[in-house]
Image 1: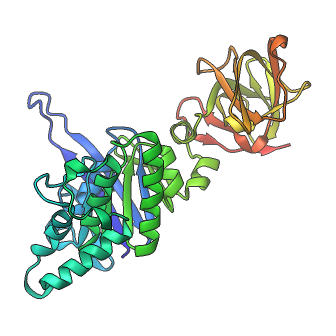
Image 2 (image 1 turned 180 degrees about the vertical axis):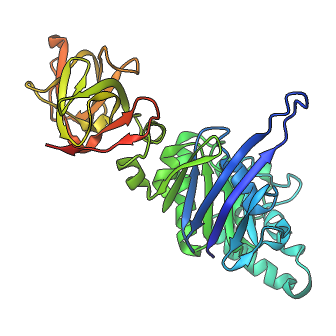
Image 3 (image 1 turned 180 degrees about the horizontal axis):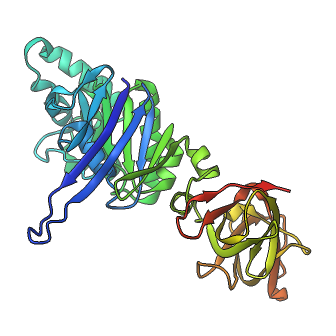
Length: 367
């Protein structure tokens, strides 16, 4: 089921009636979610991603704009009539019911032509439970389950109605790191097997990039960039997107362009064309550094962290905006800790220039 958002806007009235300043939670959001795809809404707290999800679900009414499921305008439809499955951050399971009863509950409330027999409901409940691999836990109650198992019950309950659209509101934030990794892989598997169009809200960029077909990066209610995760990572449209995506995060420096050369402090790191002389903000991905005794960028060496196949080199530079510069290099490269400094050449496709004032991307060609 294709989902289309047209100029979607949500404005909340100010709590301070004297100040009278409204809060724009989502501002003119236009986007098309292709049929059968998993799209991640990504951004920091307060960016409007959950509000967008609640408008799609019908729990929040838009101030402006329209919502379409396929060709159907569902903007004014109630939540129960939209054909959505919704999974909350806190699972929201009924504690006095067994797993089976929790999954059956949405089916027992169907009426009219959608009403099912007891056998039909049981068959579908067990089919969905098997899909999420909890079919052996059907007689347990939520208190007898782990966090990951409870999350699977919540997903099964959302899927059992065979929704047109599945909506997941930060479903992994209550899980530990190992279980979060396992569960997100399960969510991706389930989504591919069912083919249900899915919207996944998270503030964790690693989660969004690992399982989404497309991501939408938001800031203060405004969409900053949309696209395939790797495309957005490789080609950020502004400094916010560049800084938000990536683990470890991008290294940011104060620099300038002068006579076709990019300088970080006094270090000449790249020759380019197509950019006028100006002060710029420079971003370099951690994997964009190459050890080079003749390299243009010289940093003060702080520490070397061995991570198996990779080595993380921690250093400092007077022009760095961050307290430290972190570069990821192949473990085959040896760093001389006694040298006190480390020199790098920079991979051209891993360095980005941004306007000092607007923070918008400045595009260039390498000489």
